[in-house]
Structure formats: C-alpha cells, structure tokens
View 1 (cartoon, rainbow, N blue to C red):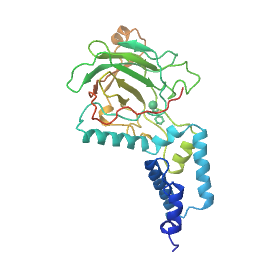
View 2: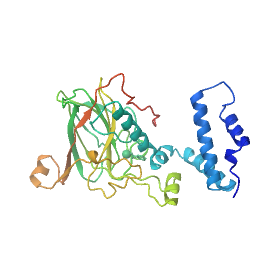
View 3: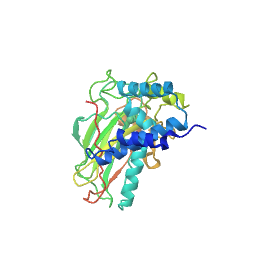
View 4: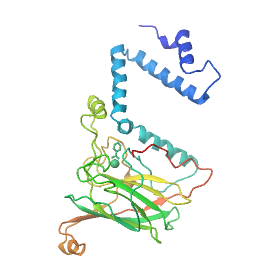
Length: 307
Ligand code: BEZ
Ligand code: FE
C-alpha cells in the first residue's frame, strides 16, 4: 500500500501555497474553493492511481472542450446544471416559496434579442416539413391572477433538432420570439413541433459520454424565460409528450410538471379551419410566477450567452 501523499505535511503546505492560503491577499472564499478543488483532484489522482499520461490526457480533453465551445454541453451532461437547479429549488423552499411552475435548465442555446410582439407570434420563419404546433396559455401569479405584460421569451430547435444561430443554415431568430402577454395574461404562438437535440457526434462531450456508456441526446422540448416587473424570473422548458427519450434526457431537465398534454388533430374540418392541409398539434400550458421580494434568494442566473 502506497503512503497517501495528500495527508503529508509537504503536500498540505503545497496546497496552502497553491491556493494562496499562506498569504493575506486576495479573495478569502476563492482561496478556500481553490484549495478544495485542488485537494479533491489530488485525492482522485491518488485514489485511482491516475498515471501522468492519463492526467495529461484529461487536461488535453478539457482544453478540447473549451476550444470546441462545449462547456455548455458538458456541464449539463454531467448533471451539474440540474444540480444547480436543485439547489435553487432547495433555497426557495427554505425561504417558504412553494408551488409555481418548476424551473429547469436554461441550456447553452439561448440568444438574446428575439423579435418582440404582443399577445401572439409565429416562430417558424424558415420553410420546414413537419407538424405545425399551436401553443397557448396564461401567465398567472401564485393566487391565480393573470399577469398582463409578462414577457414569454421562447426558443426551440427545428424539426431536425438544430437551433438557429448555432445552425447557420437557419435565418437569424428562426424559432425564437418574445411575446408580451395580453390584458388577460395570455400568450399564443404558432410554430413547428421540434425534434430532440443531440450533441455533436464528433465533439468532446460525446466522446466522454460514449466512453462511459451514455448518449448525448435530449427529448424534444421548448424553452421559456418568463419575466414580468415585480415577479421572479422563471427559466423553464416543456417536453413534448410521447418522445421516446422523455425520461432519458442526457441533460436531466425533464420534470413531471413540465410535460403538458399534446393533442394531435387529424379531423379535416379542424385542419381546414386552421388554414392547413396536414394534421397539426396543440398544447396549452399556463405558467405560474412568484412575486419578487427582497428577502428571497436570487432568481436571475447571470450567464454569458452566445452573440
Ligand atoms: C438544449 O436545451 O437543447 C441543451 C441543453 C443542454 C445541453 C445541450 C443542449
Ligand atoms: Fe434546448
């Protein structure tokens, strides 16, 4: 049995120096976090007898993740974005905030500045073949009162699972809109039912997932930020019911309360009444927001977005 270097005075002193704990300068909390992360990494190296060759392979891997702009994929794939959600849920519960529409991960594919319209919008601007979706609902407060003037910022993938901006073949802001709720707190939009998303098959996220026997796919879903003055910003998604991966999301974002019923309409009269030639789908989903208060944990997550 090899001696555990981690517990020697020499390595303890090394960690203290590495994290700046032996001086009075800098950020005290950051020093402690750096010390913990370095200690945990050293412990992993010792416990699993990680060789220098393996270690440098891991370092190159992380470099590749950054260079491929895949941090936003790897983090949810490792369950960490969902873990941050669970922590925010826990903090809110502790502050007495119960109920409301559950949050779920933002993911890395939001773009700021989508076109804004009142009450309703059409999201699909590029021609696609697939099932037309009409979605509507109401934004309410915890007492069930409609929230007029809320902004429903919605974005989703196309029928091939790709997001505009990241997929240069789509026009800017395709399948991305901001809708201001009407005086009854209502929003509605027309779009195309999205397909599920998959991480790039040749990228480093998929490389790690495949190496641990996992896939990098998400079930079909639609993202929302819902915000209104005086209310806590809600970051959430709905899933498209019936997707085979509904409960097998590589990013762990599915929540039971976020799977609304979907109706597939095949009646020719209904199809005709909508001005369509093919069957279409409808979903109704209401959002319940909480009022903001000074003593509540922060609802807004600041995060860099692609631009
Ligand atoms: C998405 O929302 O599509 C997504 C979320 C996490 C990782 C990759 C994609
Ligand atoms: Fe998504």
